[in-house]
Length: 252
Image 1 (cartoon, rainbow, N blue to C red):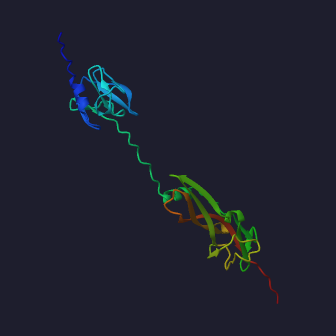
Image 2: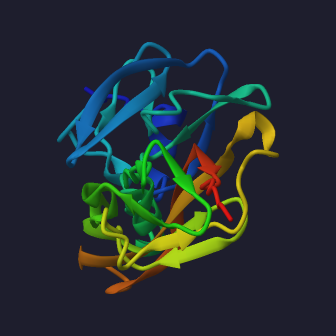
Image 3: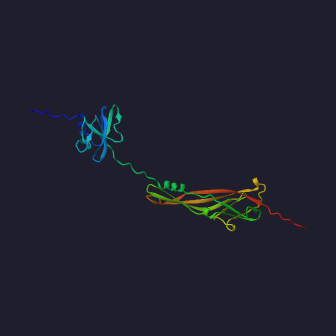
């Protein structure tokens, strides 16, 4: 008895001849079948209700088509339509390259984390001072201490340190630059007025103290730079100060 050999379907023949990574257009009647595992890769199939059985042979690394033929496609794309047909592609499992974060960018992040105090102004004599009398100037010592902050990204950690450099005092008449926080004694930071504040708005000078901070940083981990310097930072506060004249009486 003679038997007639079964002829493969067109879709099955196309699958067996399809090289890895190739593109195949299927009729519009195809539909997305469930995801299957092919050699460690998760794919979706486009077929007329069919599916792919892993490990059952077939070309292009896929399984044997069933239910009218099936072709593996990208899991993320599904079965997109292209010019009246469904485009089916083999999945690409190539991992995305890791994002590279420049160390300088992490250093700026650390600088943004720095908390710079606003100086607290002190003067003596107080609550007013006098013309031709040396006025002591100082700020709280904790306001003139280093500040540290850290930031991490891309396998690297940056430590930013703000070091106080000076305090610039604007006394209304002139400015004074001091390299310390000053003290009530006035030996390292002080000013002597030449004129009273009687003619000033409110009868007082508006004085200010501005601290300048130098910012350095160092990096540990997967750094492209070991360290460096960032833009200076500053903080300012103001306060009114009354300056009076000492009255004297003379007699013949």
